[in-house]
Amino acid sequence: MLTIDVDDWCLRSIFRVRDVIGEFEQQYSVNEKDPNLWKAFFRSKAEYITRCNFCLDRLEQERLKREAKLPGAGRPTRPDDISSDEEDEEVVFDQVFVTNASNEGKMMGKWLEAARKRIGGVFPRPDARKQMERHAERMRKRKLDGGKAKIAGMDNVDPEAVERAKKWEVELNAASKALAIRWLRMGRDSVGKKFRQRGDELREMVMNLTMRMPEEDDWFFGAALRIEGVNLQEDGNQLLLDRRSLEADQSVKIRKIEVDYNEFEKEKQKVIDADRREFEQKMAEAADRVQIEVDLRTRELNRLKEERKVENDASEQAAREEEGAVSSEMLEAHRNSIIELEELIDGEQTRAEMEHAKVEATERAVFDRKEMLAIQTVTDRRIMAADNVQRIQRDTLAKIRNEETSWQQRAARWTGVARRKVDLKEVEDAEQQTAKRRRKRRG
Image (tube, one colour):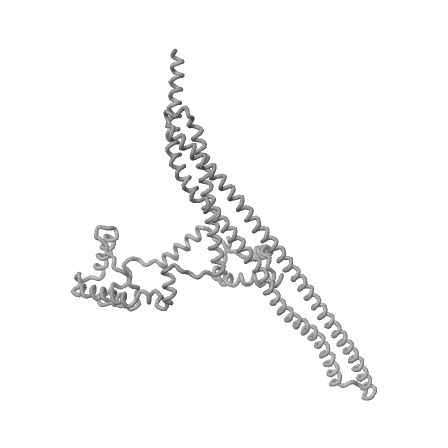
């Protein structure tokens, strides 16, 4: 059986995720962003604690027993206790009238009876009506003073913002505006698509019904109904030809807009890529120059260090010949001079790299802003092209919408009548054929 100290586990689990993140950054790097690598590392390092359902149920039951408060526990409310109605910052609600016969009225009646039994005494209280009138007057006063706005935290709201909200005026950021425009365009495309689909379905229905209403059956359908269907079919075909002609012109215009935008984007992207390559080459050349300067300076300092070592050795040799030994002060001074030169070499390289990084960061920020402006130009051109395409589509639909709508209404009415008659005629024909076959079998 597995036994775990839950308190110690909870204490360690608070900081465990932070420890795993620190180990990940220490093993790989702070800049590592690969999600798959992090998932694999987390699975290998994470620790879990599991408990069965019976244990969870038992712990939950024990918690409920500790937190449960049995009915009737605690001291009863005294008549002179301070009510929440005396507080100044309570939420003011409108009056609600509840009938005694409703479920709410019955529930409130039971609650009132139980509360009176617990409190004890004679009910209603002598001053009950005065308290009710005082409470109603306080509610009316708070409404007049704007108590609801104050309690809701809206007493400091800008009046202009309130007026804009009443008029449904909102301020949108760039992302919200883009989403709204996209939704509007998709909605318009969907409406136009459904309108065309409805017209195509009605044309198919009119053609099918007119084929099922031959001229020799005019005694049943009526010549007027059949001729109306033929006329509807001709008008629908003519509107379809007109629509296809307009859509062909629309396609030519849209194609020209798309070609112009693609050429513009290609040229702009070529310029952006060329500028980026030139900038990166410039940065690489600057880094090479800095590295060459650092190498030259490092060689110079290394040569100076070697010369300093030779001078120190000569001084130490002269001291040994004259005094028999080298003093500790001289050795310490020589050692410090060499250390200073080594620190100067390391510091010179670090200083040059930091200065170059600072200059490069400044130049990259300027170039990135310039590149973003160029990219924004392409984006603006794409938005303008999309707006032009939408405008052309709306104009095309507007040219035939009125006539097409009128035709669809007439076609819908005619198909409703014609379908019922055609179905009835087919049923009667089927019954006649059945009766005819029966007579033949009898004869």
